[in-house]
Amino acid sequence: MFRSLGASGGRKYSHLWEFKANQWRFLGDYRGRRFVVAHAVRKKNDDHKEATLERTVRILAENDSIESRNR
Image 1 (cartoon, one colour):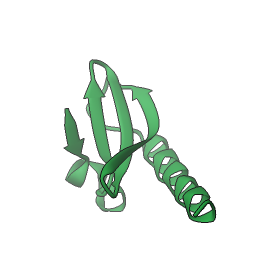
Image 2: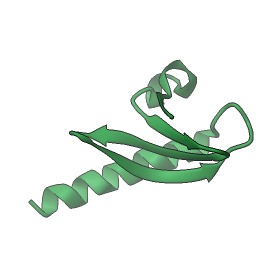
Image 3: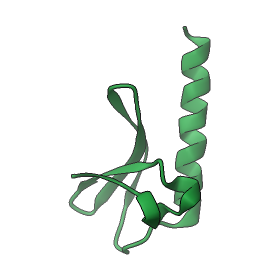
Image 4: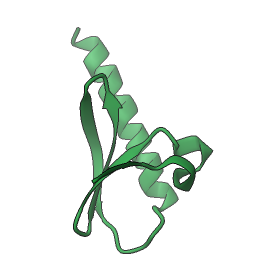
């Protein structure tokens, strides 16, 4: 159910992972030993839209800055 976007995400987004549950795709990344979900989309095509991947990366960066402030 988990898979790395790897080459399908392009070089810029190859570090992202997705969790698949029926038509829903939960995009995120591993932070230590946990999986952080940044964005969820109902996916009907094989490829992700560029805007969806950019939003996921932005949300993960915001999450990292918030977590670093709270430590």
